[in-house]
Length: 331
Image 1: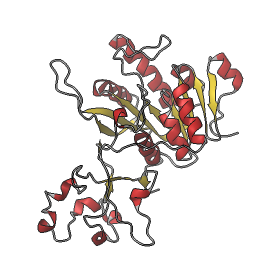
Image 2: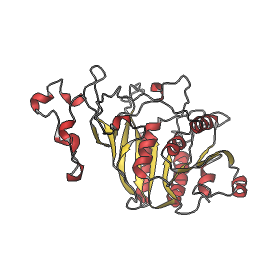
Image 3: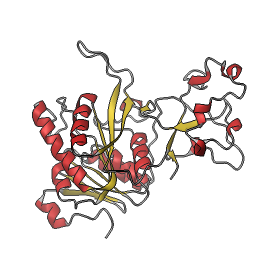
Image 4: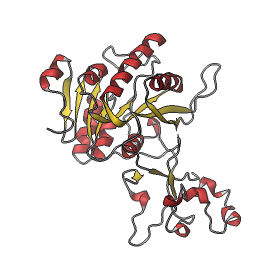
């Protein structure tokens, strides 16, 4: 039995979980998130990612909306959070993506349940419009908790931000960086303790891509409007975010669960990274099915970075990290 084959067909039918897609790595059901989570065994999952409805009145088709009274929304949220905790293995990871107003509530509940807070990751929301008498929203919240000390934490490296006009580093100080430091590089660009010093820091000149350890502010996650495709799915996330999460908090062969499948971004990323997965989506599953089918047929999606183009100068006999299709990580 493969790791994702945890739900028998008879149990799935009883819970009205209709199988939509199955591959060598995962299975997608159409059905309610709580019904999916409730039939998963205790301590059976390595990573849970949840991107629940934001409760802002959005319609998802077929009578499915996310307009609830705040109290009812939080009670419902606590139900699926509790189930997510139950199915996680000891040391497993939970990521929840939502608006900051709800992340605060989620965090308080997870703290009371004894989950270990790791990070509040801010995913930048470019060019958002002001809303009423409030400041313009600038980020989504991505909560990162673990069930005790994490079993897996792979260091993830992201490209240093570049100028959209000249292609140089934002931290080049207007071209005066080398005047400040003749080697053209700052210690913090490459150092996160002795084990993380670059072996060849002098090679990381201004014509190459520099990579730094991922921080709690993710500015390179493109919104859907940056996607290089005509078709736009209302609740679609950028694969780069899910690839980063999965690469950071799991290893190949681990099991990932997403009870709010949406357009299938989690499953798409899990397939690419050779993780097993289980997911559900209560609304339209056609977008997820299309993406997974395209991936199975060898059609990879191409997304623009919110940071613009990266400059690179490959070195002979060395792998340029900017050419990797997957997040650059250490395992």
